[in-house]
Amino acid sequence: MSTFYKYTNLLSLKRKWRKSSEENYNPIITTKPNEFIHIDTTFWSLPNGIKAAIILVCDNFSKAILGWNVSLKKDGENAKAALQNAVESIQKQYPDLQTASLITDGGGENHNMLVEDFLTNIEAPEIIKLLALKEVKFSNSAVEAVNKIIKRYLRKKLPDTLDQLIQCLKEIINDYNTIRPHGSLLGLTPMECYTSESINLDFKQQKLEAKKNRIQQNQSVNCGIDVCK
Image (cartoon, rainbow, N blue to C red; front, side, top):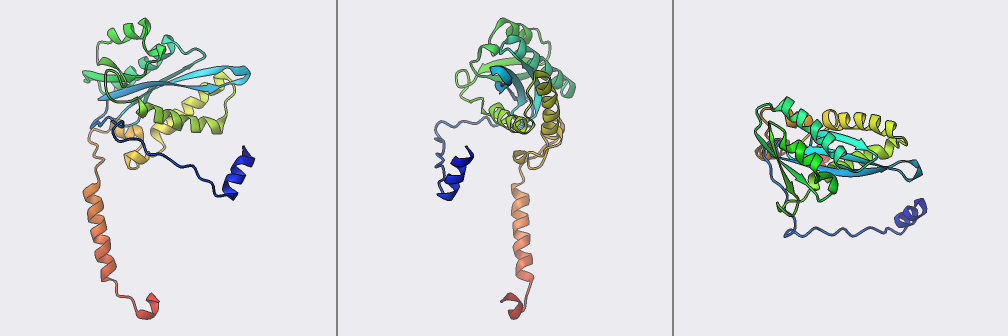
């Protein structure tokens, strides 16, 4: 691998990235937390060919991880535990919330009696489960992007037992949710965005005013010819 990257750099070889078709790209546009939440499973390889299934539940608007669980089995118990954790987070921060839509992929861990019974028996909020790209035109890419970030963390820590993985995930998710500023949230952390009563992520007007002021300030500076040279 190191040799491959060495020669790609020496030969100035670069991968040609293809832009996704705008016709097939239908992102969810949300304006507040809990409009859409997502659930997805990713895997972390442990020694002896064992794979741990990590399930994340995240909020589309704030990118916050609301619930998670990890198990050596990719099953309904794992998904139910993650959803239960997420519902507790929602109820704590938004006790008056009435409904939320849950976007899932077609994985069997998301579609079984354990999960269905759990969602049916929640008093509030009502969780409406929708299948990505089937019952809604949206994909599950929001949580898949979060999965990629979590995997980057794990590649640095390299846990090799289930207990180490669980401990790493506790630290990683705390850092992701509450410490690490998120670029798409304009410097807010996901939990700052999720819990704030009034969030405005549209700074277009402020940027235009800052640009105008900067140009005026630059034009008002009269430097000498020798200095400018």
